[in-house]
Image (cartoon, rainbow, N blue to C red; front, top):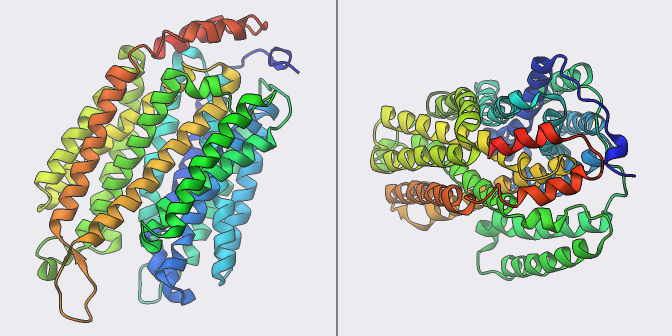
Length: 502
């Protein structure tokens, strides 16, 4: 069944309500990634498990997101975005309730796997925006929804810190917060988001989904667990080799399937390929700032000779929340820049702010004002990146591939975050301060400086990607659009609007 046979006229009623509902849903996505970070120690203590075992509470969500995001993004393109959104939110609510009520690590990990499916909400939300929002307002809507991702991460940190204060902290409250917010998001989607305007139909490429899932699991598992396993251990190296093999298998599979989950021509399309590379680098830099600053400010100055001895709550509220607030506000300016200057220039401008922020953080992280100020500059960089990447993707693929294309871009950011976590953890553990027996090892200050320098270099690469790699992003656009237009879908106005975003 063709894409054109499913098209119905575009509706524009209640645009603001739709954007707000999808923004709330997207905020829930990012909260699932960082919600447990401040309470991992509490979970480990309550459940009496090892550090290696409790790390699966975060790894499980990462792997689940990698598996389900592209599959559900494609499923939404085929069978309707709204029912897919509703289904994902129901699964997430069930997983959150399970995590909030269990005292078993096994069932907690199962709940986190179910929560990981929520990552698919973001690409589905962007697909809905492309269908329902007027072309001249699309860039601003995407920027707002994208901006809620960074805000959600900060809100999760603050919420987790507040809910676990006191002498007898209970991590279950954090998951009840997830339940409440997910129910609100579900209500918003049910009442504000209209039924899908287009459905491509077709069969689900289960073989392609399975091979891509295996590829991502084999890639992300050693990245997230390499520090525990050892970077030269047989398990780590074997998983990386397996990822390379599965990458070849996946490409061969998708090249031969009649209706592939990922159109390899779209995947290799220059603007899509380089936007995904930018997403990976942005995810790396963003998570480096989050985890690096969080660890840095909690270092006891009287013992380590640096740091501020901040609590988990103070680290979240005082040092990280300003970054997320700037990201939320800056996303709106990013949307304006996308419309006036183009997404490529906006991405480059944001990356320049990122270079400036990490240079500042590397050189002067011995004062509270410097750490907060540098973080706010980095937050502006993140917001511009989040505003520009969806615009680049939407302008580079036909409408019926929006979900899967943005799903792959979301995964690229997740991979970048996972790499950042592995790199920072390894760097901080590689050089420590000699301390008396019985005291936990503390990293040398130089390791934080090195981490921030590497993140700044990542932003330098984003500048290069934007100015060089994406320079001809609009050139390959015409033949792809002609093919869609010839199928009978009335997309001329949308095509012109998309082209302006680049």
